[in-house]
Every structure is written in C-alpha cells, then in structure tokens.
Picture (tube, rainbow, N blue to C red):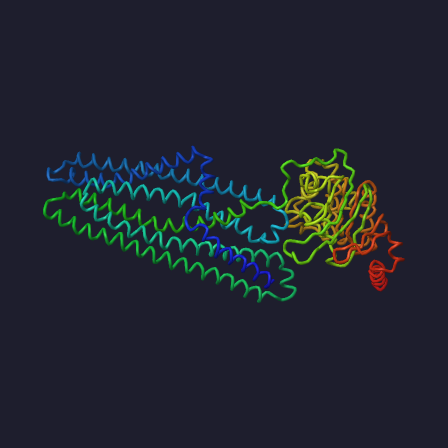
Amino acid sequence: MDAQTSSDTDIKETETAETPRKSRSLAPLKMVYREAAKYPSKVMLALAALVITAAGTLAIPAAMQLIVDRGFGEAGGEAADIGRWFRYLFVIVFVIAIGTASRFYFVSWIGERVVADIRRKVHRNLLRMSPSFYEENSPKEISSRMTSDTTIIETVVGTTISVALRNLFLGIGGTIYLFSLLPGLTLYLAIGIPGVILPIVFFGRKIRNISRDNQDRVADVGAMVTEVLSAMKIVQSFGQESRESDRFGVAVENTFDTAKRRIVLRSVMTAIIILSIFGSIVLLLWRGAEGVATGEITGGTIIAFLFGAMIVAGAFGALTEVYGELLRGAGAASRLAELLEAKPEIAPPARPEKLPNSARGSLSFRNVTFRYPARPETPALKDFTLEIEPGETVAIVGPSGAGKSTIFQLVERFYDPQLGTIRLDGVPLTKADPADIRDRLALVPQDGVLFSADARDNLRYGRWDASDAEIWDAAKAANAEQFLRDLPKGLDTYLGEGGTQLSGGQQQRVAIARALLRDAPILLLDEATSALDAESEQLVQQALDTLMAERTTLVIAHRLATVRKADRIIVLDGGEVAEQGTHAELSAAGGLYARLAKLQFAANQAA
C-alpha cells in the first residue's frame, strides 16, 4: 500500500508541477462558461438582476446627497420634503432586495445545473475509457475529483462569479459616479487602482498553483479514506489500525501545509490591497473635509462621495477575495477538464465492420503478442495462436501470471494486442465496434461483482429488458432461485454495497444467472464456480453444462477438476502455449498439466 501511495503521489506531484505552467490564468473556467452559455435565458435574467442591484447600490450615495442637501440643506427643508427623499431611499432598498433575491435564485440555478451537466459529461466520458486508463489513474482519485472539485465549481458558478461581476460593476460604475461628483478627488483614487491590480496579478498566479496542489492533496485524503474503509476487514485482521491512522495523519498534514501556504499568500495580498484602497480613501476624505470647511463642497456631496468611495473600495477589495476563489475554481476546472478531454484508447473505428448477422461464435488468435501498458517490459502473451470453433468448449489453465485472464481481456477488446490479429466470426476485433463485440459475450468473473441495487437489477444487468419470469428461469438454472425467494422482499430486496447482503457463493450464483440471462453466443467463465461449496458447485456445473452445449465457451480454471470435460485444454506458461489436448491426453503426456493435476488431486485426497 505504501509503494502504491508513493507512486500515486509522485505522479500527482509531477502533474501539479507541470499543469499550472500550461495555464496560469482563469482560462480553465472556459469549460464552465461554455456549459452556462447553454442556458442563455437564465444567464440574461441573472445578469439583469445583477445590473439592477448594482445600479440600486450606486443610487444610495445619490439618495444620501439629496437627503442631506435638500432635506437638511441651507433652505431648511420641511418634513414633507424630508419624507420624500427617504421614500426615494426606501424604493432603492426595495429594488435592491428584489434584485438580490432574483440574482441569488438564477445564479444558484445556473450553478447547480452546470455542475450536474459537467458531472454527467465527465461520467459519460469515463465510461468510454479502456481499463488501461484506470491503471494509470486511480478510480478513487477520480471519484474525489467528481465530488470535491465539482463542489468548488458549484460555488464558483453559483456565488463567486456573480459576486465578481457585481463588484466589477460597482467598482467601475462607482468610479464613474465619483468622477461626476468630484473629479479632482476621484483622480487621486484612480491613481491608487494599480496598487490593487498589480498584487492581484502577482499573488493570483501563485495562489492558483498552490490551489491546484491543495486540491490534489484533498483528493489524496479522499482516495485514502475510500481505500482503507473498503478494506477494513483486512486492516483490522492484521492489526494495522494504528499504522493506517498515522498514514492518514500524514496525508491530512500535507493537505493542511499546502492550504496554509495558500492562506498566507491570500492574507498578504488582502493586507496590501486593503492598505492601498482604504489608505487612499482616508487621504481623499481628508482633502474633502478641507473642501467642506472652505465651502467649496456641500455636506451632501461629501457624504455621497464618502458612501461612493466606500462602495468602490469595498468592491475592489472584495475582488481580491473573489479572484482567489476564481483561481481555485480554475484549478478544479482544469482537473475535471483532464477527465473530460481524455480520449479512449479503444474506440470504434470511423467505419466499423459489421459482424455477421448470424452469430457463429468462432474465435481466432493468430500470432498475438500483448504487453500491458503498466508493464511494457513483460509480455503477457507471446506469439499466441489459437483457433476456437463454434460450440467448442476450451479450457485455459496454467500457473498464476501465465496469461489466462489476458485472453479474456483481449476477447472483450478492453485492450488491443501490439502484434497479431484476433477475429470474432471472421471479423478482426480492431475493425469492429467494441459494443457489437461485447454484445456477443457473456462473462462470469472470478468474483461475483454486484452493484448497490436490488436483486432484480443485478440479475437483469445481463439483459435489461428481461421479464421476471425469465429472471427466475435464469436464477433456477444457476441454483440461485431458493435463496432469492427467501430474501425479505424477493427480487426487490436491496443487496447492499457490492452485494454484501449475500454470501460469496450466493453472489457468484447471481453473477452466473446474470450471464445466463444474457444468452450470448460466447460464454466466458473465469473461475465461475470458485466461490461455491461442493454441493452448489455440482448443481451449477450441471446448469453450465447444458448452457455450454449450445455455445462457444472459454473457461479459465485453477481447479483442474472443473475442466475435465472440456473439448480442449490449453496450457499456458509465461504467455505461451505449453501444451494442448484433452484431459486424458495431457495427463498421459507427463508435462506441465500432468504435474499440476497430480499436485491438485493429491492435495484434494489429503484434505
């Protein structure tokens, strides 16, 4: 576990170091903008509400000027006049309240919708990826991106962007208003604006890089939690709770250290900007107070200028905080964009060749050599040639690592061989649509992989339109009918995460029933009865014998007693065919198969 974690960390650190160099701006958020642009009516309504609230906010200083100069001015305003200007102020406040509520609704709606769309698009693309993609990218880390990073984007779209635009409007509009009010004083204020922008640009780039690193560290924590909790029985069985706690503590501290660097930078940036803005305002107010004392400026004007300057200062000051959040969003968007833009190594050709309408179930391997991407130095299969006739049952045996499971991976076109050709019913797999290939295959894996769903959905995963009657027929053939009927709600019973409500043998029988229900011309059995007790194995084997009689069947088996009836047995060793023949022929030959059989049968007799 340590080695794997170290390797993953090295990869992520390399990505963290390199990726930000490609884009040190808000450019990754273009993906988010494109998604939001699909809902123009909502975007326009949100912008309209935003402009209204910004305009209402900027109208407050003008209202204060009227109240002071005309309500309490030199002419001595009457009560009715004072009430008139306060009603004007109340209308402004009402408009701001309605506009703010509308803005909140529309931007929140857009935020939720955009995140939902991005999640769906990323998930759809992930479903297209071949297994080699998940050898190089941890599913647990991907899961973290789909949750934590999308949450950041949701905040950015639903809050941060609208706040940024609002403050930008307030800052620009407020500056224009101040120029119209007191151009001389406002000129001094404008001179201080570069003092705000330059720190944003300088610190912003550093903050974005650290934010990306921080999100990677958070993903590490999420991946570690998932890994350990998924293997809790192993952790506790070997008494590794303390070690896993320490390992998790290190990951959490790494996350905290990275976050601390980001916090320090943002704190320094905020201090510099606030000092620049409010220091300028103090100097401007000092000059304004002198103007009031000499009669050059009215009291209402200086009050309006004060409120306007506070709005402008607050807007530009808030932009520093908002920019930091936008940079975090850009980091999250870039990580999701990597998943969204990933291209599957196994994809349908531009013009796929159609498989014959009448499925025969023949398979042909000719001089196939294959190396896994994660282990390019070691061939899993070397110059492998095998012809499988329709309806033939071929068993594949051999020591661990001999290449047995690799054959299944290639048949399902999860990978393509580096050399050689594989044909299904005469059509090269590389020229066919992978979906068409897999439609003619039914797999029973070594471990009965079930989903967090009810029994019915797990069974009909092999054929989603199957009726309950067909489901029960398949369950009966797989010797799963009795325990399924005994479940509290029958087929409607929720089986738990990964089918935890069932025993290992029951899970395997559900997987066999699922394959039976698919009714495909080629059956792939990867140690299909390994998790069954002797009695269940015998009953299931009888059902499989009936099924295999009408189909091409490939059987991977470590327990050689299960392959005695196979038409042919292929013995693999080191990715090459060492022997082939019937059980009787191979036993008499005295080769690898005979030695393996002797060891297993002797062990069974001793037991």
